[in-house]
Image (tube, rainbow, N blue to C red; front, side, top):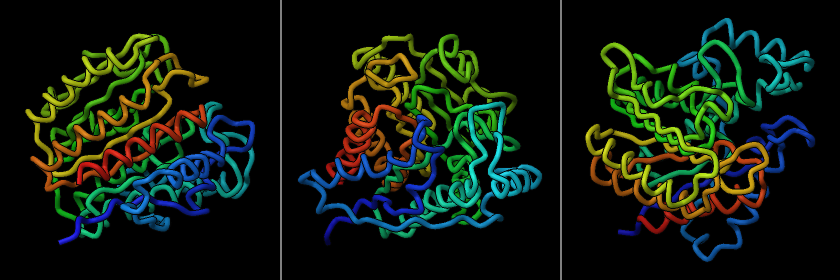
Length: 317
């Protein structure tokens, strides 16, 4: 039987999530990645899938009704910010953010149904948004919604969320800080030097969830060697807490040359992580893994990093 394909999501609706030409999170990021991917020899192993828009009920799996209504109203107005000054209230951002969420959920459905073995959503992984507010360019937290969706629609409980973005995935961490079934592992630049200032090693979950969360702060300037040393801890952690499904936020802002961070990984770190997570998924989660692009503001870096993740997904079939 032929191997199940790797789904990669592509489409104008997904590309439209962004905040203007002068903002680090511009709408060109989608096409820069897809241009790089199209040039690869393994492209024939990929199925391109279309974006999907999330319903308000989907958003409400993670976010409060008051916050969803706030974004809807501010998006119609198109002025000001959704937070203290990082996330502009662009006209139409409510629907664009719903397209990100819906596409991540479509990827989850494709993997759960067996249509795809693995799936990658480039414009997604909006890990800073909290249950009741926007933060750090993130309007709705598609990662947090995906966790709740996997539970409600697909009946899974033990989900692993792994994040190698330079910024701590605080919206996911605090959204599930007391949840013992959300296994969380995050390598990020030390919060003493970078937004959002959270993710200390001592933050391991609270109450019944104590010990189910792994935060590994990396020092500014850390490169592939330091990543490799830290990554072994993530693999060991996931083996100790085997999941039913893996969500991988593979932000490219942890690569050398990003304009707003200070880590110095190459795309090899992203390829290494993706390959290792596929192997863990095969052992514990019936191969089920979805990756989201996350951050990354050097366009060449994000194109190379995300393409390596997709390559690892294809080669792990």
